Length: 135
Image 1: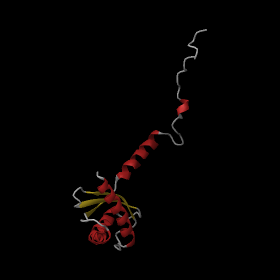
Image 2: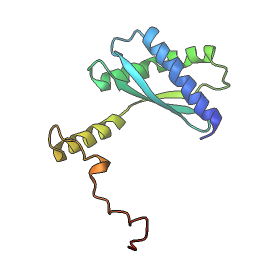
Image 3: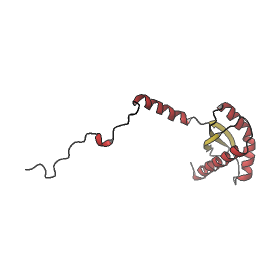
Image 4: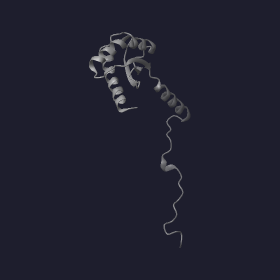
């Protein structure tokens, strides 16, 4: 990814987070966190990954965000110095589900309250005597 796209991704993430928090009035959109933005190389579209915090239905939240997308895009066009504002496509961020599954698997394997042994407890062979063993 180019530096320009990386900067645009971060800028869109910041701006959209603020706009959704302060300006979107759709009751379907509760507390959301934007976890990532992936703008296409041609700047035609952007996938916005969101995670719903408030415990409401993610499908409803995504529907509310999709309904607000034209408003968000217009507002971004007024504030950003970009030739073309990409079409916004909201997606549920499911990456945390993988991490959650790994933690569940580890908790099944490791007994409760146990920790892996520290490195010092691993048996290491004795180093040879410094005098070469000659007596």
